[in-house]
Image (cartoon, rainbow, N blue to C red; front, top):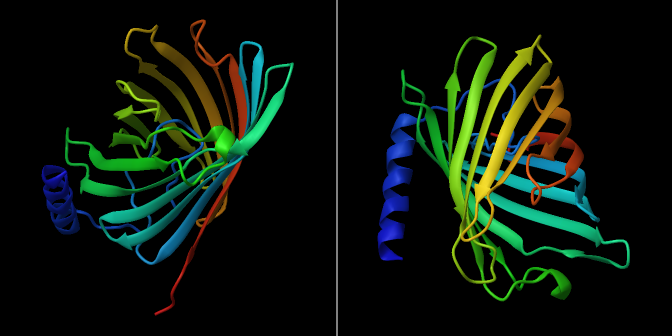
Length: 253
């Protein structure tokens, strides 16, 4: 724990020297599985809210909603809170509840420089006490990922993540990956395609593909639509999602 704290403090100090926040339209972590390395602007609250319809073989999950709340604390750090309520229906019974709320942050590591991608570290911990009993876990459920992004042209880029997730049930983590090329279309539209998956201990790896579009009403308001499917038997069968993202300055100068 002491070593981890030293690393976080070092990254915060390093990122404050190498990261310059940009003006212009907001970057979001949705709708794809690939999280963005961009930090929420200092003093701003940013919300990313989505509704999903997911199918896993004979089981269907309605997520209503998943909500990511972010606050820009400094030019190199944002506070993050994730809350997700859902209904699981297997055809015989359905249950509705709140998954453990996740608290965490995003630390900027470095800006893009030649072959070095723009990079940040995201971390959360799911807290069992902050959930409904039917969706609780016996242990804390931490996760982390390194988020990276390369600019290919003025309107084309590629993002990719690697990381690990613990499910709160004990045991080894799942190791996750994502890869998502994206394109700006005009001044307001954005589109992407993606491959993602996870490697699980002593189980079949999971792989999937998805794609989607987004439209910016302004630099601070965006809607999105996305969908995807699994590539092997144990992966998600298919899903579709819609979302709304917005930001505003919390305190005026």
